Image (cartoon, rainbow, N blue to C red; front, side):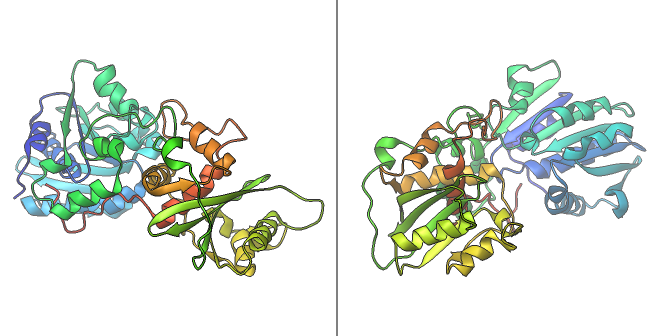
Length: 407
C-alpha cells in the first residue's frame, strides 16, 4: 500500500475545488495525481474523469504505467479500451471512466462532459488554454473539480493562477524532492550534480524562480568565463555548428582535463563560387588546424539532405573527415540551455571569440516563456551552436526514476 509523505497527503486531502501540487522531481507528484483521479472516480459513479499530460509520449511513458501501478497496488478491478485510452474502474458504488489525454490537443476536449479532471506537469504548457478548456468541461458529476501537479518552470501561467492571481477555491501545496524518503541518496546527488543553484530551487525544492525573463545564459560571467586559451596538442578539436542560412556560425573548442576551452569562432558567408557553406567551414578549420582530428556537433536537423549539394550537411562534414556527434532528434531548447548554463562552471572562452561572448551576454528569453527571443537576427547563432555541443557532451538530464518508488 502506498505510504504518502506530507505534501502528498495535503494534496490528496485538500478540500479546495482546484488544488495544485508544485514540487521537485521525484517527489511523488504523478502518484498522487493518479490517486486523485481514482478518488474522484469513486465520488462520481457512472461519470468520466480526464487525466492529461502535456504530450502523448508522456501519457504512454509516464501517466499510463503509473495509473496501472496504483490501481494494481490498491486492488482495483478495471478494464481498458486502447482506442481512446479509457479505463473503466470499479468501485463499491459502481464504475467510472478515467480517460487519458494530451493537453497539447486540448481543443479535442470540447465535446467531453466531465465530472473531474487534472493536468500533470502543467507548467510545461505555454499558457492556460488547456486548463481553461478543462474547467469548461466540468459539467456532469458530483464534484466538478480540477487539479494540477507539476514541477515549476518559472513564473508562468501556473504561478499566475495559483499564486499571483489566486481566486477562491484555488490552493497551492508545495513539496521538495528530499521529502520523499524512498529516494536513494544517489538520486538526490545526481540532481545536485546536474543542476545549478537556480534549477535546484525549482527542480528540487519546488520553488518558483525566474527561468523565463532576462538573460538566457544567466550563468555566463565575463570575469569568470573569458580568458586566455590555447590549442593543446594531441587533443581533438571540437566544432559547434549552427546551420544558419547566412551566415553559418561555428565555434571551436577543446576539452582539456574536463574543462572546455573555446579557441576560435568562424563566420561563414555565401561566396561567389559554388562551394556550399558547410564545405567552406570544414576547410577553413582544417586549414587553421592541419592534421588535427575534428569532432563536429551540428544541429540534428542537418542530417536531412541539402538540395543545393544533394548531400546532407552531416554527410558533407563526414566527407571532409569530421566525426559527427548529434542527437537523433532535436531536444527541447530548455534542456540545451540548462546544459550550457551548467557548463559555464568549467568553461573558458578566448577574448577573440567576440560573437560567442556577445551571444552569451545578450541573448534573452521571450517575456513569460523559456523560448529564446530570436527577434535580433544578429544574435543566437553562436549560442545555438554551442548548445548542441553541451547538450551532447554534458547533458542535463531529467532523472529517470527507473524502479525507484516515487511515493
